[in-house]
Image 1 (cartoon, rainbow, N blue to C red):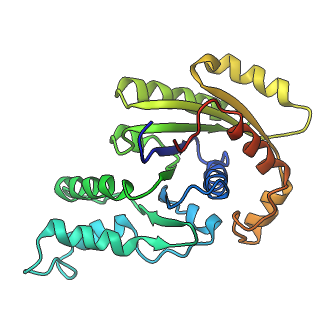
Image 2 (cartoon, rainbow, N blue to C red):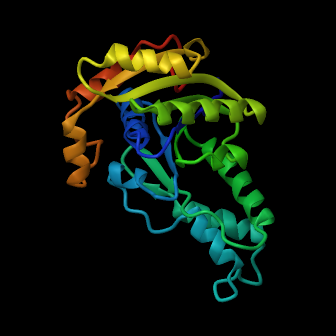
Length: 261
């Protein structure tokens, strides 16, 4: 794999992918993999909240400001240099990891130059970290716009619903048609009620080719996560002994290859 792998967490909105992105970050931190870069690519901007990170600036905001007459680029500063500086300022430093929020998508008008400069800078930025974990947006824009490139590990998350499984099938088809490079695909069936494991697996088999994944994991429904998110508590601070994290922890440890290698 790459020296600075990209780990993308994808799936339909509401399936718990932000929780599993946070679990992935926590798992790597506990293994001593540092520094890490956590990227919130979902305009709903939930990733920072579950990590206990306060965000003041986003890449989307930088893009808008760059095109604004009132907040334009200083005349004596090259545009590429200005954008690179603004992105660096938007990176929030936390304990063991940095955080960057992509923010809202672009509005009307042409953003081609700004987007290309930002993408190139983000590509360079990620090489400074042992790994990057991306909480992708609920839709498929991150693939259709080719903003998720050279993904070493794609974690596809579904809750026990046919709609969520069908969304993953669509993501896989789109990834294939766009020839997006993905070295390793993992399937996580999340929020599984006790005693329903086999039924959920049967549903997954009926909608997905399970042999196309390196591994398939099941994460149980967990009221501790619900209560933590309701209270606004960071998922990095809750007990590591809870059922959902333990299931995910053991799933990642069982993989033949390390997700951050």
